Length: 335
Image 1 (cartoon, rainbow, N blue to C red):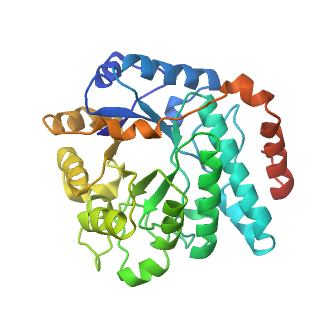
Image 2 (cartoon, one colour):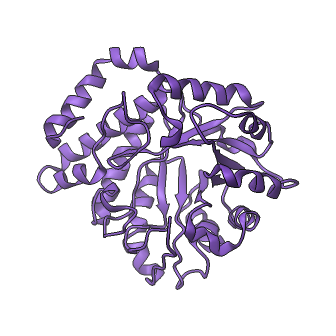
Image 3 (cartoon, rainbow, N blue to C red):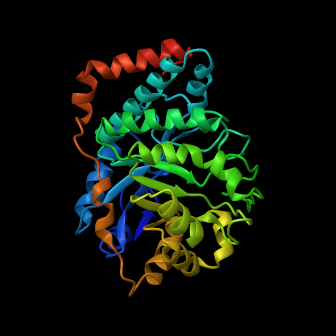
């Protein structure tokens, strides 16, 4: 299955045609697709109306610098700001993470969007792409926050996606633009980077997004299209039974698989359930690549959001303003 990107704030005729394709399971929205709360709500409705089957509509609304919807939405602090509180008041920090998750997920669901790819459970150890998106450098601290964040998302009817498996935080390189190689052995990864993923799986996380990082002591290819990582370790050793997403195949670190068709097939063959094709210019090639493949398009139905209030209901909910105030008071910032 494919999750695709679209170009702007309204669907084009070509994009409506893409949504008719049996392999398209949904759409990933970005800053380029956002103009206002009403517009993104209308775009979500248009995507659903254009497709002959249920669609999963997704976004990255983590907070901090990775927040695609801005005007009219809470200015969510990065996870690192919440993580910093853990040293002095762990209980308050974990409660705040759960509130952050509730607020983020409530606003995304009120917009007709099903899923924010969250939480980031990578360790905060200097990676250029992760940075302050991570709660902490300590695996046990990140594990505790992971469970709290999953609870907060689930309380709103949003599925939780752990990313980026098996851990993107320790290598320096940004896989959007570079190849990233982590030389550590599996035992070291088990004792560190895998710990938050284990906690998230135990907490009932619904999906996992793979990293485009290569771990040569474990497998020769990036984790995102590695049967060793997906089938043997994630599903076999860790017992994960949910949905496995690739990261975006337009990122530079995915190019080692070859052209667009080769990237799509490599990820699907390795065990990814869904391949992200976020760049609209790659969608035609990706759709041609999956012609004739047997695809389980029902696998994403469990990730479609449940129980949204809509914006009027959300703004009338006292928890919305209270959660904004609590984040502001605790972190000393505008929310």
